[in-house]
Image (cartoon, rainbow, N blue to C red; front, side):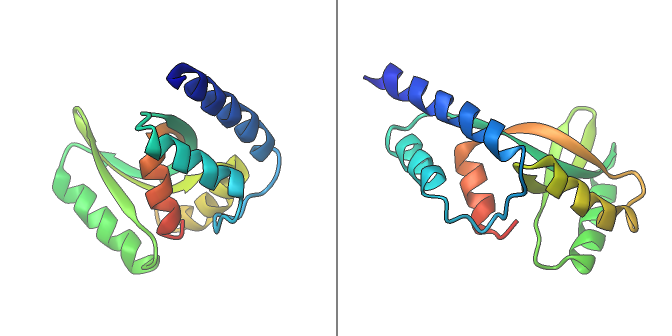
Length: 138
């Protein structure tokens, strides 16, 4: 039974992501299929991941540099969130959770005025993080 649910969720994610990538998406989601997927994954304790686009603001060997970048970004975009990641040997400042690359590119154009080395990063995150980030108005 659990394997069937996992297969259905993976199938749904594949179909949904291929459809979503072809049109603009507003992240104030009222799409019941995403909410259903999140509920099923949570109740079944499935460690499901989803592919998203984010914007890497900067990578540096010094965590102090990343904190400065994060503070600068939050001063410019106070309602947003910046993740600080450590992937040896670099600390990274990453923002945004986008299913649609076009939305990420639009945001990148605004960010590039202040962060010249920023770029779009495709990454995989857990469904729980995706849900949390959606609730933080990305």
